[in-house]
Image (cartoon, rainbow, N blue to C red; front, side):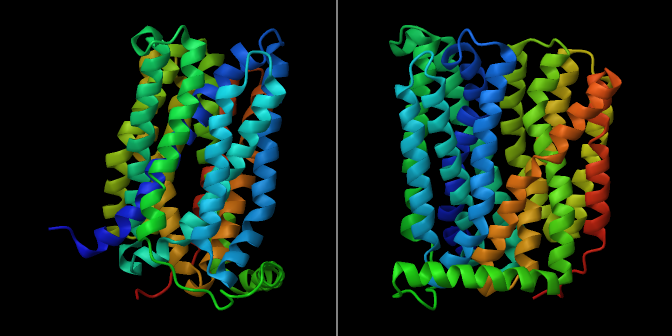
Length: 418
């Protein structure tokens, strides 16, 4: 017999299953490689990398600026699901549009990719804020972990299928790997769309105080509320301290995610092994995220996060001495064991700290910091590596982010159990 909390939480968690296909197949997997080999074919490596970085940065800045405003608007209008639908639709349509981008059309392709990334990241503001609608505070850790866990499985399954399509295009009646990649974008769009439906149909949402207000009145109220939120966060010391610590350590986490393949390439490891390692991380991440959810219930979310950050420090040290593909696989498994746990427990701990009736706007700030997070880490890592002439020293520099983030997290005054 299904548990009552699971009946409410599962439709919500399936959105992680849905959108993680974009994060794995599109964002982490095929776009970086396809941009170099197909859309920007013939361009110098540094030029193609700059083009992709510009698309990522543009999307990140747009979402970082919009996130807290949109969260405030959604709280005022009780429209979290409607905003989630709008952003996810943007992501789905733009991802499907990548199928149409031909060889050499890098500007068209990366514009579609940037818009899809805005849809992906923007929808997470409202998805995260709906956590309080599907779970009681004592279940936040487990329910949040369920979402991340399903995300790892869903994204990993479709990514495995897409990789098989690319390596065996003839099995699917496709002419070559490039055509298989373009069809993979369509599978991601369909996957994302289909598995968003359960959240839209079955996740409850409390009605906002101005549900019947005009669009302009809702937007204006949202900006007013945003200004109030800045003031409110400064007064809520535990929230402010947590956000500062989160910004530092999640920067380190995201830097490891985004720079791992680049770091492996710098050490001359084969590309096929790097993709395989990415798949391993996905499937290890599912049970590990669930275990971390249970760990959060037993020892507390903060303790679980601190344990995960300690492992990340070990990852940095191990990465410094890495010399072989076997070492890279070990690194991938280790990251998979803690990555989802740190992310899910951070979300659930934050949900406990914030005012429950302002979840949208406060999660807007949370997601804004997440988008601004990938600023210090890559610059620190590449800058130290450039200054020393050794990329290995760059990965050691990330210990600073994990250490300072952990110190601030330790100083957060936790609320009494509800």
